Image 1 (cartoon, rainbow, N blue to C red):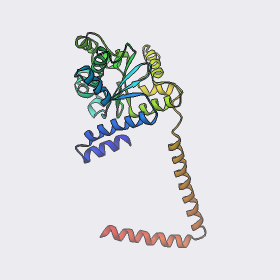
Image 2: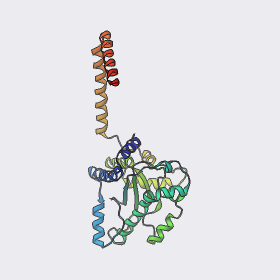
Image 3: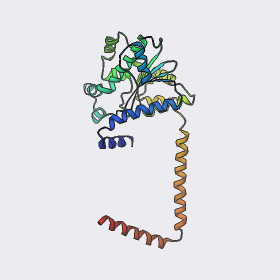
Length: 273
């Protein structure tokens, strides 16, 4: 349904993708604020740049926990070529402009802030939030499968790797909602989940294809109570309607068939007009 909805809206409005990107970024901001997650916004990061007198690429958010989690949202989904191709060169060309670019964007932002002494030494992670899974879910997989010079190019540009490649993950907006919910329910912090994911992904026998699988391993959050209550309410309303309908027509089979026939005839006439 998510795939169908986005494709339908894009086909009706050529500017949908641009507007959707801003909407997705605003939604992430609302999500963080609603759950009281300590973070810096793009504007606040921009203000840090001004104080340093620097110009550099910027991310949308930095989650401020016992580690710094740089986060950039990309309202993208895999196209047909990305979904079906296994050719590294084809995938690199298709993903370089946005999907892979986000890695360099996060590295540059981290480098600028640490070099400018805005943050002290810290553990750094990068989360790239996408609309739909591309099934290449980490910096390690990008480097192994389609971009073998990734680390080399980052070192050439910055002199080091500000955010370790193993600490880079691509997650969907659904994954982010889950992570924030888990933290707000005091089950695990986002940093704890990321550290566990890095350890598990170091070994082939425990690595996960998608980040959502790491979330499942830690139990996932409890279902949103508002959503659960709304679903139960709608289900109960539907069942009541069915039962009341059954009671009304009980013993009135001839009237029911008569009214049904009139309705069909009326519908048939309208279709002919």
